Length: 401
Ligand SMILES: Cc1ncc(COP(=O)(O)O)c(C=O)c1O
Image 1 (spheres, rainbow, N blue to C red):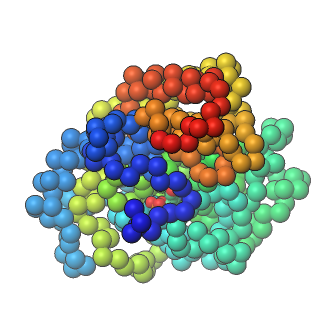
Image 2: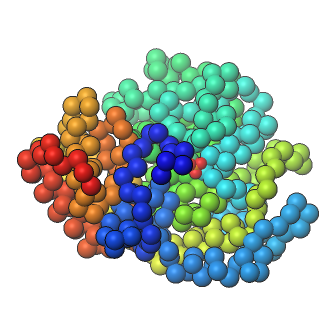
């Protein structure tokens, strides 16, 4: 792989995967691996889902890509389906190519509608590889550190009497970009009271609430969308990753009230694959599969079983500090040293035994975010392997795969 630029934040451990089906990857020697990370949290309905394969064979033979002055009716059908799912009927949608792009589109739209200079967000949120939200420039963003709010004993709505709340310059803030859960991969959930307080304070002043559902959307957290755990009504929703099941498509959906505030002004954002019929068709088909196969409920149930199994291993072995998660978005935080030796060893040994989890260098966390279609037998064999690895002696020679 010496002729590829590779993202430096992760370790490349397998380089000859030749085939994938649901949660199983196969290398050229026929070895099978269980993908508990669903790629980069993208294959929501499993690798090579038959309905997506069929669509990818048939749709390009009809119309896959269009131009700025012609389109296909199915793109409007897909837009209506997303607006209805989100309760944003009468609003508008744009289909784009990546999560970063969907967030950026929402941010630019919010900035053009809001007449205040700043957007508010949480300090530990991640929004993408490029664009304003990835830079979080202090002239455009107020980043709130909610860590100390996690154990706040106050039962009422956040108020000016709280010194942390008082630091938020609401007079200068036109919108709130909320990522309901991934927290830069660590799976931390900002408290519901804080989020409800921010949302109501801003919406009372005409501010906008944008939700980044790139990671938490389409069933990942046990509900269709992560914001539904907070009982809030967003104005703009960005969806990515799982909505394409591995195909690069993303969605930005905008409430009718926000569309009205544009007063007919266009959002000046042009790229070649915006509203492509192929991407829109894939997103619509994934949405239909999730609904027709009951995968949101299934993901919630399998997630509960996986979490219970991990909790039992935590109680029986000394290696796990905490399990955090909702649905099938789960972080296993290890009891580890500064070099994250145990996390690395556990990750490598699990790969050797045929199980792929997420791991980011320098962080004592393993991520489990399998497809909502993962088999229960795969969950059980993974839990068995994990317990065996954590219960076994540390072997300094185990660094090969
Ligand atoms: C929470 C969150 N938002 C946005 C993005 C950006 O999505 P993409 O990598 O598809 O551009 C990511 C990617 O990991 C993410 O985790």
